[in-house]
Length: 381
Image 1: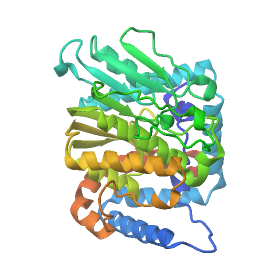
Image 2 (image 1 turned 180 degrees about the vertical axis):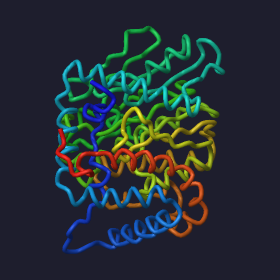
Image 3 (image 1 turned 120 degrees about the vertical axis):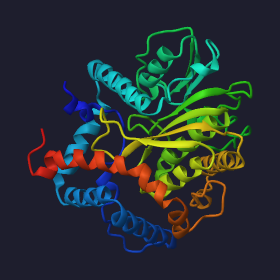
């Protein structure tokens, strides 16, 4: 299988970038929906005026919306990921090692040797198949790691990382780490009462130099119906991995996060947040993800005890708690522990940095979409 087939087997579960923005026919729109549309329009106008790469990408997305072959293309990718055999899983593992190499070459993020031989600590919130962790452990001799992963019997990926005494494997659903997320008493009538972990997996002594937050909701994961309401499962997963990683990161450490669409409101707020207490870089690898909107946020020299970081941790935990225990009405605010900013305020104080961060991401995706068969009018294989 050559590099052109990487996206065919990529086990990222997500909706194609252009489908995310496809116009929807809705009879009535809530105030929140209307506010979201106004924000999106303001952001798009700002970026289209300042970033030619973004304007080109938007035109390609529009072309993709108008071609049903694009839907079929990405659906075939998702089906391949859902039904991956051992050969495909191994290929994906190798691809993620290449992605890790690209990220490190651009940012140096995987090197924690300054901690000292045997003293480095790594946290991987969604470990399997293990490509990132394999690179990190190889690069940092005798460093120790804790890796969480959804159990394979629950629909999680297989772990292909070779066995090592330096890795503590924990096969749990991180969205059910109630005690770590501040909830030790579970309502007895909760549909998954018995599945929550009411003892902490990470203690105050568990601190890390490097944390990976690249987990995504898997279509193969069997879960209760309430967890898929209003896309709540993706929010729960994001909140869990971000809150616990930042909370347990040593000051000066590094976080690597998988995000989508630099122009999306929630993504912008997360970029803006991390810029307050770390040095941030956006990296879209060419080894994979090219046609999709996904990219990696690399935050180095993270000051995890900064007031803004502490507020964000509390906000993520509250959102997780509200979504998990039925308070959906309280989770619309994405402001991460602050008063909801206006789009004008955000573009005024962060717009130039957003352009700098997003330009290469939009450029690489645009290049890939331009060559896609459903854009060129060819039949997809």
